[in-house]
Length: 379
Length: 131
Image (cartoon, rainbow over all chains, first blue to last red; front, side, top):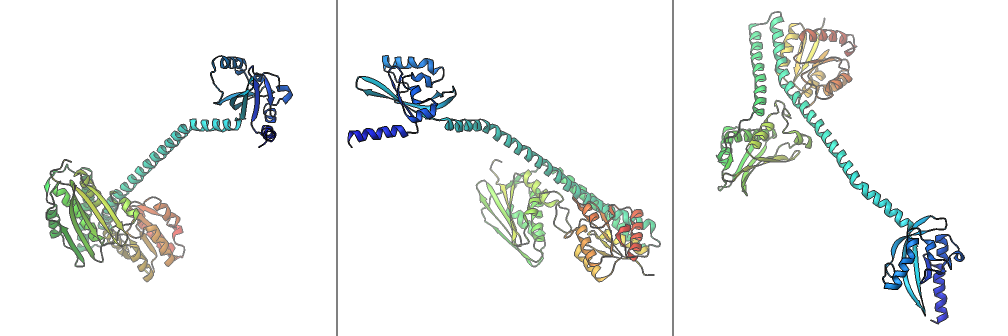
C-alpha cells in the first residue's frame, strides 16, 4: 500500500473511531484529538489542543497527573502505558464519568508522544453496579424466601397435625358414641316400650352388654397402642412364625397361600409375640383385600444384616389417598374395622427396629416389604 | 289411617334394630338398611315418609346418600343422627336440606317428636322445612 494511502486510512480511522483518541506530548499538552473526543468530553478540538490533558480529569487525578508523567520520565515506570485501566474523566460541564483508558507510547523522531484511547464505560458501569446491588441483596432475598418457605412448611405441619388430631378424635367419637347410642336406645326401649316381650327384653339387655364390651375394646385397643410394651427381643424364627400364623388362620377356599422361604434364612432379632400381632394384621388385611379370591404370597430372604420379608396379595390395591393414611389410627376402609390394625403394626415394627415399605396398585394388589434386623447384628 | 313408614340407615346393626323396635312399638312401620346402596334399594322399593340417616358409613356418607334419596323420592323427610360428621359433613347435610342433625348418643325425647312432625309434614307434601 502506498504511504499516502496508508496515512489516509489511518486518518480516516482516527476520524471515525468511536473511542476518543488523544495525543499528548511528554508534558501532557494535547497535540491532537479526534471527533469522538469532542463528543465525549464536550469541548471543541480547538479548546483542547494546546491545553494540558489534565483538563479532562477530575481531582485528584488532575493534581497528580504531572507527577505520573515525571515519574515515567525518570524511572520508566509504567502504571498505565501499555496496560490500560479504568479511571474517571471529566466533561466540559464538570460532570464525571467512568472511562477505560489505554495509553501507548509513540516515538516520533526526537519527540516522545503518548496516545490515549478512551472508551466511555458509563453503561457498563451502570450494569455492573446494578449487578453488584442485586448480588448484595441476593443472600438477603434467598434468606427471606427460605424463611417464608420454612414458615409455610411449619404452618402446613401444624395444620396437618390438627387435621390428624381431628380425624383421630373423630375416630374415637365414632367408636364410642355408636355403642353409646345403641345402649341409650336399648335403655329407652326397656324403659318406655308398651309391652316388651321377655325375649325382646333379653335381646336389648344382651345388646347393652355387647356394646359396653365394644366401648371397652376400643378404649383398650387405643391405650394398648399408646402404651405398647417394650419388646422382648430374642432370636426369632420368621419362617416358623409365618407358618404357624397360617396354621392358625383359615382362609376362604378361593384364596391360595404361597410361602416361599429359603432354608438358610437367619433368625430375626425381635419380639416374637409382637411380630405375630403385626404379621397377623397384615395377613388379615391381605385377605380382606381379596374378597373375590386371589393369591397371598409370603417370601423372605437375607439382605446384608437384614431379613426382608415380603407379603403380597393380588387384591384391590390402594389409592394414593388411602396409602397416605394407612398408619393413621382409626382410619379404615373396611365396613367393620376400628382402623387400629396398621397403626399397631407400625408401632410394633418401630419398637422392634423393623422398617416397612409398601408397593400398591389399584386392582392389582399390594406388597408389604418388612426389613427385620437379623439376630447377631448390632441394632 | 296408614302407618307412617320410617327407614333407619346406620352401619351399626344394633342401633338400627333398637330404633326400629322403639318405632314399631310406637306404631310406625320401620325398616333398616346398613349402607347407602341398601337404603336406596329400600326407598326405590317402598315409599318412606321419614329416613333417619347416620353420617359416617362405608361406601357413601349420609349427606351424599340424602341427595340420592331425595332424587328417588323428593318428598322424603330426613333426620341425621351422627357420632361425628367429618369436616364439613354436618354443614353439607344441612345445605342439602336436612334441618336437624342430632348427635349420638341420641336423645330419644328429642328425636321421637321430630320423627312425628316429619312424618306429618311429609304427609302434607312439605317435608324437611318443618324439621
